[in-house]
Length: 274
Length: 233
Image (cartoon, rainbow over all chains, first blue to last red; front, side):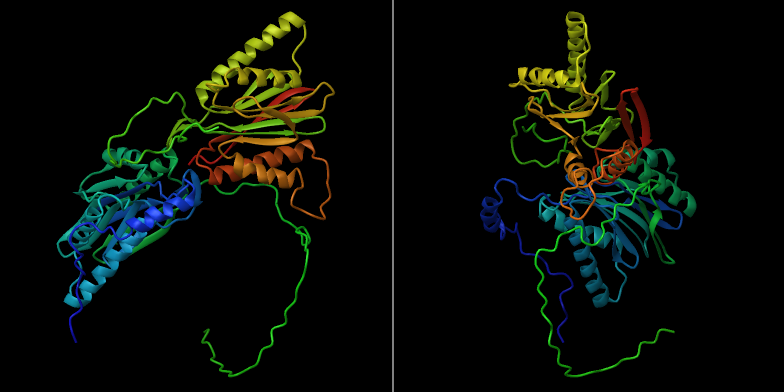
């Protein structure tokens, strides 16, 4: 059995396969080409004594309208690595998915746990190759045999390794809190509290961030994905119930088509619900 | 009327040489709503003032009291809102001094239309809605576009979340798109509760709407104000 390729090394140069198709499609949209869903976000990460804490808000906006109030921005990469994504929602989703798949192939092939620096190299390589066309700003955190690591990868392929980071439209608000509160070798509760306050500041100061806060704690022992870590204090306070009784929508015509069913084969499988 | 990109966060993406032009307008967000009842009128607005993805103020209401029976709600570019309300106040005083009486809601609406059209070729970037009582004591709502086209309505929403609020009001007050429902006339309590609920919904989905809601209720007794908190995130 031939060894499957660990990573498909991409063809040299830029890939212009879709250029002709895009030019043709542009004419069909009457000047109003669809805008990609951006997550307009606050994401942050902190390295603490025993590992890494990642945090994110849960609002996804589509040009100033909230599209998703409970969006998951902390993506699984490997059992010891998670990645927060800001920017174009589809790009962060697909890029992290692709990275996760490639690292799984690597683990199976080599029998080793993937290292954080490998994930960062793959991301950087891919994003640079697309010259910023993939709008993904990522914060990758993980624990491997070499220690606890936190990296950020920008949409153009830039990489930074820092003990605390924030990205997204609310990054400046969060960074203020992190700069003030960060100390090396924090305890777990203090680190979670710091990230939570940083994300909360982003939620209050930035219009693109909002709703709940998700936290992900990665240590040698395992991962604690807390979703939501803190639920938004602004819950539904509407007084009146807006319900419609049957008959509110008029029925114009009714057509009943009876389905003629013929029992071909019957198989009963009892479910163990104990 | 298009006023260019409404305060979007700029993408830092180098696409080649770009000509930068100074834009005299800026979009400061905010939603305004007015409802006319049998003997009352309600003008409500949120109090958030924003620009781009930042918040300038959480306490900047957009309802401006003009007379004892008229309130105007202005949203859009805050600079033009302030100047326009100053001009309306001055014109109200001039009318009072020449004619020895206060302007009626209908007269204010007609005047506002001419003021706005006077700047047809460099418009006031303001979406106005006037709410008040007419000469017969009945509720009146007048809605405007930035260059002065106006009409009398029963209810109207304007500003950033107007597209979300208007269909809901059409359904709940106008009984549109429904059948077999009793057309009960709107009471003041029900109208106020509806306005509050509708703004809570708008704050959920529109990033520019939130912080607090200012409700002005206009009756023959005068103008009473209520402030209700909204989402701050």
